[in-house]
Length: 117
Length: 114
Image (cartoon, each protein chain N blue to C red):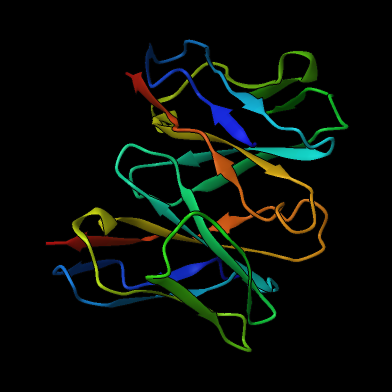
């Protein structure tokens, strides 16, 4: 079974603080893909990053960084020097790679981040 | 480069009615997936269309049906609406065979069932 758990329901930080959003996943697939999406109040899910299961390199993009650890089945997301515009709901998602069942994304319940000015 | 578009933005229906939601995929994409997102929850997969056929389906009743047209656009139909069908309906498009098939989402249609 595929499952994504985001244990943090809501997080509030003061502007310029660093914040880490946790994501733990479950899958029996040997090949899989992990994603992070941002959902601002407008509702549209904005793609942030994709990571393949065979590539454990961490990635940094500006103030965003991602830490993928297969040993702990985690794919955590850190925002450095948070800004008010980072306030949104963030979703972690998992997609398997099997031919007939690997087309759907499994989303976590999301973490609502509020950055206080 | 046009992104994923959905119509209408908002919709209000009463129980028992039928509704049709529309989606145009991102330019160059040929696969459309539909998701239901209840308030405070993550999106739940309804089904995916590719080559005008339903390729995969999530755990949703037959009241939920869809269609994909030759131009890759898609419709989601929901019959016999229930109060519990009130949600944000998201359409996502992707390119089949592109490795990871990253899905790009539209702004959604907010359906309210009274």
